[in-house]
Length: 181
Image 1 (cartoon, rainbow, N blue to C red):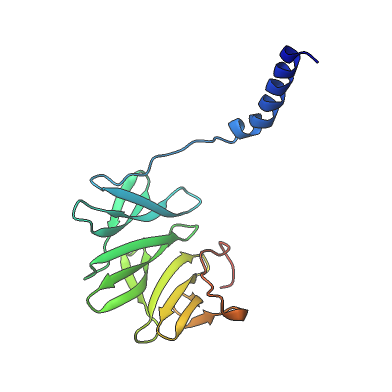
Image 2 (cartoon, rainbow, N blue to C red):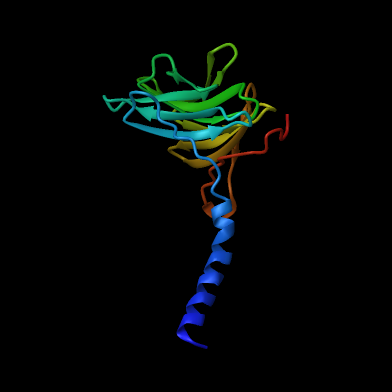
């Protein structure tokens, strides 16, 4: 086989192999909270609403919700830092965590009533919710002096520690949209 034919054959193989990649490019939307230094998208619902957090020019974290093309800042009352880390598929509930003088706790934020509800655990435990589903289940990570655990809970229920065999530390970062009420 001549060098020209080899080159043509290799080019054809390359084009066939990379065509699916080109087709999978999709559409990308830049998410950049106005006035932020850095923006971090953390969750998205089926309508395309996005939750996350951003740093301002003073290096302060603020949570945000991007809904209908509008950025809404989510600052937990009295917190020095707020990070929104997940949103339910219907967009009705956002979860995240906050740091304040009184400690680190998780929260839920009801997008309809615009009310924050604290998620806390035992005294001295830091809790970081990462995801919430439409059934009101929340999952995340707990850190305390005795160890670290994944957790699962109902928005209005008790926290259930999730551990794994062999001492590994589980971190729960997602769950099905309607799993367990």
